Image 1 (cartoon, rainbow, N blue to C red):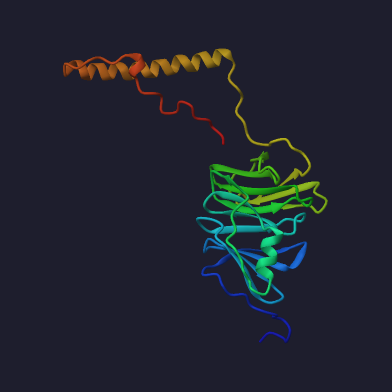
Image 2 (tube, one colour):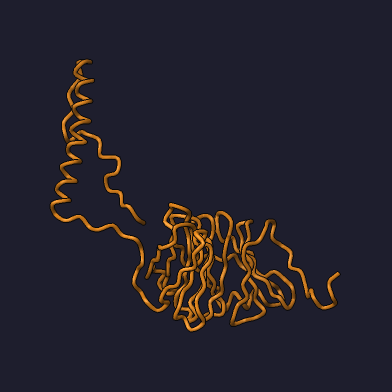
Length: 255
């Protein structure tokens, strides 16, 4: 049995397992929990009551973190490949935490799309930035830094070879660390704004001309094959303008 005083309470409300819990650093009575039931629940730990049920994502909510700067702001990440910023107004907080408990549905302040599952979100100690990590083996494992006020991506780091599952800022923000399924902990300059993504070298003019020639050859070969078939059937021949585009035309190697 547990010794007396070891357990102070139990919060019930989620209908599936939980991935993450986070206390507000500016209001120790507020606790957020993120769950596979697609919701974030926000609790008053003094009264043990649930204040808000946030329908945060369309799939498992894998991470939640409170802002160290704005008392009623938090961020979330989920398996629906979304990153979201949330802000509870002072008026809503007063209504919800008052005697009548008139809590309203919350809507995200900002939503960012990711190409893979989002595993962790973490605020910069200053509160102006928040990091989110996504990815899988061979599927663009990346740490993305958002600017909180605008929601703009200001930095991307992608040196993991497999899924980055967690990220953390040093207290003074000089260092950002990420750890992944590739068995590595990567350390970044937390105050820099430069991207750190693998990039192929850019084609020079001759290489671009060669790519165009190769593409033309590809399309011409398809036209010749189509004409060989259609002429045997007595149909009209294809021209270059009618040819189908190359299947990789317009694609880029990295997100």
